[in-house]
Structure formats: structure tokens, C-alpha cells
Image 1 (cartoon, rainbow, N blue to C red):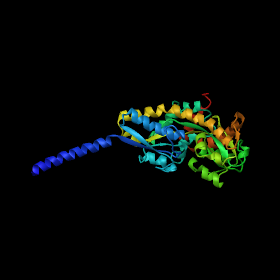
Image 2: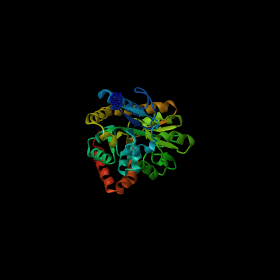
Image 3: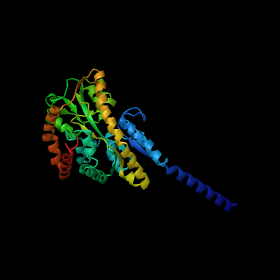
Image 4: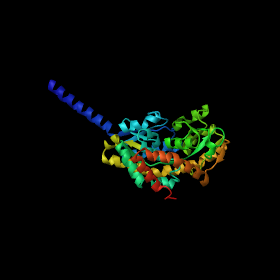
Length: 341
């Protein structure tokens, strides 16, 4: 009787073990971002991209691996997402990379004012030397770039317009990166550093007079409700930011090769969606702000040339002089600038 109990107990344990193993066979990645949540078809395109990524990944791997999306910095606070990713405590994030400039100074190149001049030029980074070096740098820091996503931006102001450098004097401006802040400081503005998901409250309280961020964030965070003037639209700007979908290298390396390949393939396939959505928002933002009564002030080449002169003497110079590594990234970025129309 005792022997039978032992055999039956062992068999039941084996079944329980196999059941647990089967239950764990499917991997669910957690994707964090700071932007408002939506659905596959509606809402901020960055949230939609994450949801499309999750759905397509599950489809291509027959459910072996999928993802859950956590918008609004609900899983990890905005400023902590990059460091959490590096440690493997977060699986994936869609993140404005220049926010990580305090940890990895070289990545400030990904929101260098007046460096990137068009979406075509931004897209060229991926296969250019600047892109290859960025991939190496981030891999060394424990991060994998899954989708290359760029966005143009504009400026929303609660009072008077801020179009030229002269008009920025004395204004409190949220620039979005250390280098953008340096350019605005050089133009005579006071700068306020905060993530875009905190911009509405800052504008509402008067902590800032103007906010510079992507067209999509200017829409999603409803800055139109507080703005009297808008500068930008149409994809011509001093502000092009790299906001990639990234994955922890610790988590990525632990996956089997077929799942790694699926992740990278889905990420690459979604880049076309991201670029088209970003361009569409550059047009939509103008209509939305105009409908709310904002005066619209498009950038033109002459105005951007004024800003570029200031950016070169301040942000570009400061960045390149920080280290040999920074100087290398600056040189590689300049090699792409102006080469693609």
C-alpha cells in the first residue's frame, strides 16, 4: 500500500510539474511607456504601436511569446524606465531616448536641436554609421533597439508667440532635452526640465510659458486647451526626437533565437507605421490647435537658420566638447545631416 502511494504520488507530481512547465512556456513581455493608453485603432500612435507589436508577436510565434502594454507610466515612472530596462527589471519600453542622457551622455545626440532636418534624414540614421554606433553603445549598456521611431515637434505657448530666438527671451520653456535647453538658454530663455507627461500641469500652473515636444504629445496631452499660439507643423522643425521601442538585453538574450528573430522582425515592420503616423500628426496638430483658437506659426527656412546658428554655438559645441565619444557621435550625425531630402 505504501509503495502504491509513493508511485501514485510521484506520478501526480510529474503531472503537476508538466502542467506548470506548459503554463510557463508562453512568455509575456511587459511594455511600459509614458503616453496615454488607447486601442489598436484609436489613440496615441505610440501606444497603438506597442499594442500592434504585442498582437503581431503573438501571431507570428503562435502564442509562444506576446506582450502586455502599460501606458501612462503606470508600470514604471517615466524617468526610471531606462535604468529599469538596463537592469532587466523591465522588459520593454517606448521611450524618448534623450531622457537617458544623464546615464548615457552620448544619447543626447538623439534630440540635438537643428541636427535632423526631415523624416527621410532621420530614417537614414538606422543604416548609417551613426545608427550602427548607437546600436553598439546601447547594447553595451544593456539595451536593444527594436523599432526606430522619430518624431518632429513644435512649440505651444500659453501667451505670446515664440517663433524666433528673439521672441524666446525671458520665456520659461520646456525644451525636452539637455541640448534643447542649452539652445533656449543661449537665446535668453529660462528652461524647465520635465517629461512631456508633466507638461500640461506645468503650463496650467504657469511653471512654464511654452512647451516644446512632439506633435503627437502636443495632441495627446491636450496642450491645445492651454495654448494661444502654436509654432510648427508639417514636419519642419528644430526638434526631431528619437523615441525607439527598446528591450532589455538581459531579457532578450535569455530568449530562444526564433523568438529573438520574431521580436526584431515585428519591430522593424512597424517602423513604416510609426513614420506615417508621426507625419500625420504633424498635420493634425495644426488643425487641432487652430480649432481651439490658437494662432499658427509654421517654421520656415530663415527662422530655422537663426535657431541653427544658436544651436551650433551652444548645444552642438557643448556636446562635442564633453568627451571623445560625444565628439565621435557629433561627427557621425553631421555626416548624415543634409544628405537626404
